[in-house]
Length: 320
Image (cartoon, rainbow, N blue to C red; front, top):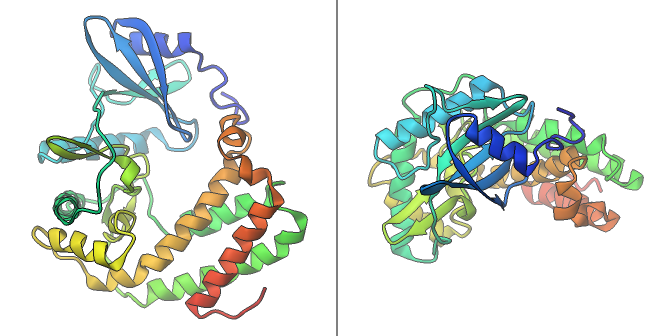
């Protein structure tokens, strides 16, 4: 499978053949769902509810890392957490068909969560506390940690190696990254003995679906080790909403309040990683179509300016 065209062979017929290879009788209906890192399809099944088929990007995660994610999802389900976990076929949840690696999930619908509600934020806080209670039982061994190497250093190397970054911005970008990396390192060092646990990892509103029965979590593809606050800040963009989320969280689990000092660092790390992710995946035809702004020099100039402003807000030198 080519790194330059990772899904070139994933035709509709290939998707249906992969699903049927584990004994599922499809009805030929196929609907592509919104996903960029992997490819995800709703697949019609004869005389049964549709399934969701997730095809993994080659070389992103090892088999062991994917199996850890699946095991974590099942551990959460066994603890009666509302998480969508992969189905097992022939004693495995990670399935193979030729070069393709995939998993099949039950289809779970839902609507976007209404996180302006104090009741809903407290509900989400309680669920995240329970999720973290399970996540703290044992570490991931193969999935790594949300750290500077993963969210700053690797993505910034991808940006510097990419033709998307204008030549005139390369030196400024490198200096901004160097400054922020040092400042963020200092911020993490200011929280000694920081405890990490297994996280959802990408817990934003798009990965929470709400039904009349309440919320459920989807997409553990970014699950890693990290501080608990990583799963909180994206759901609560203001101090008021964060307080409401924490009130619910505190009903089931204590949080180290020192972690709140890391929110701005984690926000910046996500911002840096986002640009690097686009640069790294630009060869995938889906990315230029989905993120056309990244081909515009003005977007990169604004991105670099934003990084320098963030460094100044952090207390770093004005080196623009």
